[in-house]
Image (cartoon, rainbow, N blue to C red; front, side):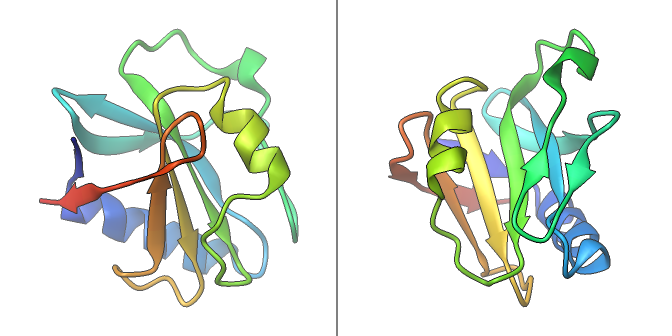
Amino acid sequence: MWSIRKRTLQMIMEASKDSYPKEFGALLRAEDGIIYEISLVPGTIQGDRHTMFFMFNKAMDFSVVGSVHSHPSGITFPSGDDVNMFGHWGPVHIIVGFPYGLENYAAFNRDAEPIEIKVV
């Protein structure tokens, strides 16, 4: 079971609002199953319908457990590209959607199956 700190989720929502109408994207850092921080990847490209991570720019960081990105459309279901990325980068992924309230997110495992994340 994964958890996320409320302040971390709030930061994700604020960054997503700030990036709107483009997507926001970052990596998730966790310890003992609690997501406590995001990590920005240098060179990330934010577009209207995509976020491109250049993972070769990612620092060696064993606390990274997955990714988070926004869907300005408000739909928090993963696209085909999302599903492909999930399978390569960690066990937990979050998609947040417009209007970026604390209830506007969904979480998935590496197989793009919905999972529960508790806000703590």
